[in-house]
Length: 326
Image (cartoon, rainbow, N blue to C red):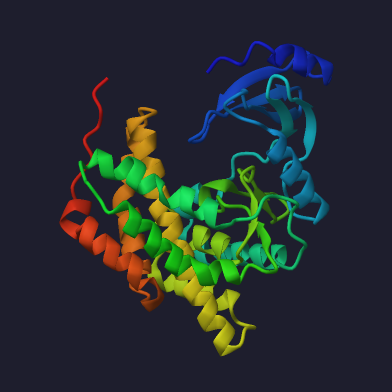
């Protein structure tokens, strides 16, 4: 990757005149990242080019989290006109790769991620938009918008909306005291820092919503297998101070938001293939279907389960999506 044209002037203004600029792994968006090295100093340059990206939400949430004593990257400088942000470098010690190499640490580190979420939920929510019905609907609609055409399926769109509206109503009703929802809280966005804290990344899409969302994002990871036993242990750990009634309601909402999120991700990963030519994301779809099928076994998801059974039977879900030929 070539650094953006404005990068050198931006770095010069911040005192990084002689820095080397090296590419690092990106994500599924238009954002790109570079490691900036000057002597013994290191930082990360985020390239969030307008109009595709707007770095202001990332900057706001980073400062909000730091003010609440969470390990979000410090912002060293910003150029909003060019979409450039220089931020703290958390290094390369990522939760995903650490657990690949040290599976014996799995329960300890997942417990840390749950502790972080529990602490976050005790803090005032960020001043962001709410995770409301319109947002939930936009997200689940990614499945009929992208996955269903890719599989040549003519589905009942009105019934799809009705089913989701029915199951999501109690979740939305429970969001009277919303928490900050990071929305992409999983093993590939957690850095293991030298002070044993968890470094947070990729939170620019944060909203104010339900406490179950980030928990299910971590425990039903789109990119990493989490065993049913570990998921249950961590869910029980999160709920250890709840009454039986509260825990039962939370588990219902957890399953509903898991199904909502996994439905969305099936649509997103299909779009990344069809629209953006990133066919590797199709490799995750079998896991996403397994997670979704597990979630919809909850009785409170019966309308959604019925819709999927009528419109996308299991034999169709097992069929691979045809990758467009460039």
